[in-house]
Length: 312
Image 1: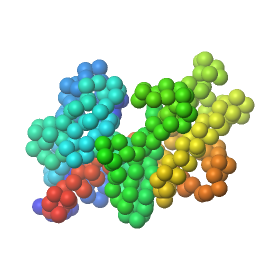
Image 2 (image 1 turned 120 degrees about the vertical axis):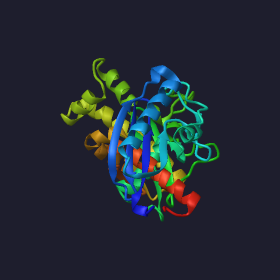
Image 3 (image 1 turned 90 degrees about the vertical axis):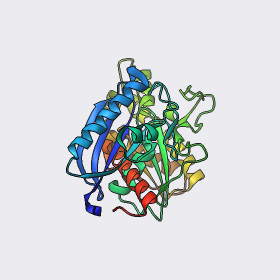
Image 4 (image 1 turned 180 degrees about the horizontal axis):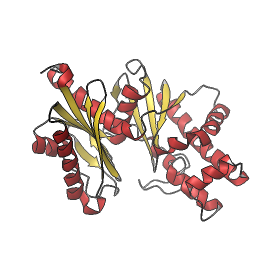
C-alpha cells in the first residue's frame, strides 16, 4: 500500500449538521456529504446518522484505501480516549459517549476524536491560511451562535488538564453581566457572538435580527452603527485579554459570523488599536464550513502517523 493510496474520513459533528468528507493525504476533498443532526432523538439518533454518514463515505471510497476516521465533535473531548466528557443540550445525551470506541467497534478502523473547534483550527492552519504552524502560536476563534476557541502551538492543539483549554467564549468580560448557558454571567460569548448580535438587534427594534442590524449598519443607520461599534468594542476587549494571556503570533477568526466580516471587521480593527498600543495580528479564516471536516481528517492522519510512524 503506497502513501498516495491512503485516504482518510473526516467528520464535523455539530448540533445542526453532520458534515463528512473523504480526503487524500495532500488535503484534497474527494467526496463530501452533509446530513441533519437528529438532536430530537438524542444520542442514539445522533450515532445512527453518524454511522450512516461514515458508511456512505466508505461506499464512495471503494477504490481507495481508508486508513482511519477523524471526528471533530461539539463538546469537551478527551483526545486520548476519544470520549465526550461534557456536551450541552445542543447534543442531548452526548455527555459520556465513548465515541472513538464506538466508531472503531463499528467499522474496524482507528478513530480519533477532538473538539469541533480544535478540528477547525487544525484545518485552517493546515489547508486554509497554511500558516508557519510549526514555529507559531495561533489563537483560532470561532464566532457563530456562540464563541469557541482553540490554541495551536507549534503544530499541535493545547488541550489543558481536562480538554477545556481554548474555551475563550467563557472568559468573564462583564462580571455580573448577561447570563450564559455555561452557568456564569457576563461571558464573552454573550457579547461577541451571533446570539449576542440578535439580542442587540432586538433591543433596537423588536422585529430586527442580526442580518437586519448589519444591513442597517452598512446603510449608515445611526443606531445600528453604534450597536455594531459596541459589539466590536466588546469583542476587541476579549481578544486583548486573550492576547495578554497567551501571546499568540496571530488570531484567526472563523465561524459563521465571518461571512459578514466586511461589515464589522473595520470597527474591530479600530477598537483594537484604540484599546491597546500593541499590534494584534488578525486574519480571516479561509475554509468556511469545510474547516472542521478537513481538520478532522488531518487529526486521523496525524493519529496514524503517531501509531505506525509511517503512512504506508
